[in-house]
Image (cartoon, rainbow, N blue to C red):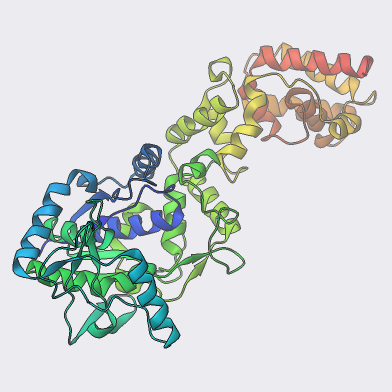
Length: 467
């Protein structure tokens, strides 16, 4: 049997990290077993589905690197197939027309609630032989009257549902649109899905889908329902916790592999290992190792993992991501040093690419001002002769390398009888505008002689005429 998994998001909102984790687990399971991963867009909710949300799903999956082997398939392009199945079931007696009005159904529900019964459709139209004048019917699936459905869930174990607790589900609305559970069932059957991995909020849908699969002549796939992702406070995930478009994580400077590593560890583990590449996860992931309990987001852990991946990633690739972040800050990266050099200098000092970009602007653009506290402490009359001496020795330096620059700074400090920091820190403020940068020798080497001398001149002028 060839493993076939599917990720089937609904474009009624943005693709957020709960959906991304589901997509990741589906993708990993297919890759681990040499199978296929299918992308399906469940867009039958025409009022709430938007092209923008569809595009975010596609863009997000591309950014994450979770490429599909088949798809994307769109349910709205499969209506003919759904109607074909419904007509077949009506002919075979597996479905029937229901002419109950909304008022009648509401009265039925209120009556059941008054008797403290579980609200469910009572099948009163099952045996109707003719239409009801003036009423456009819905179509309902004729659920089995007896027996039970056992969902052998790969995460939670077996769960038993009695068929008497399941009512006859509407599969075609009166406006001619098929319903979610029906479309999902037909799609999974037609697409030969062997493993359905999804959130545990779908568990109650599963027995109905199994009964409809059997009406199609098939047997159910393996189901695995994933526990929820909670906010740091243990509450349901919301926008304030991180339930935002996955592409916002790119904007915030996270690497896709770091985000996927983090999401994999939300409910899955392999010993004490924390850092995984996608290749690692493809080799190690198994759905049976997923925890049953919900997992809470830890933003600090995500930031730490992102830094670990930043330090390990190919510098050329990080340079491309850094260029994207700098462009968002309206920085012209052609007016500065090689981006790979900037990455090398900054990668151990930033947790996100957004932070790295903000801290690297001075490499490409002279600071418009000095940080007040840094200037008051370091751009002082006492520092002026040191800055002037540094400017003098650097202007005649033949070997513009970090090592040669470091030697000159050390020599100036030694000649002045002060510690290295007494020279390096005023120079740092002079060239970067603030008190924090990569090591000063690497910083000056990246900036280049012309920029360094120009900024030293400006700092000396600031000391002479503070404003």
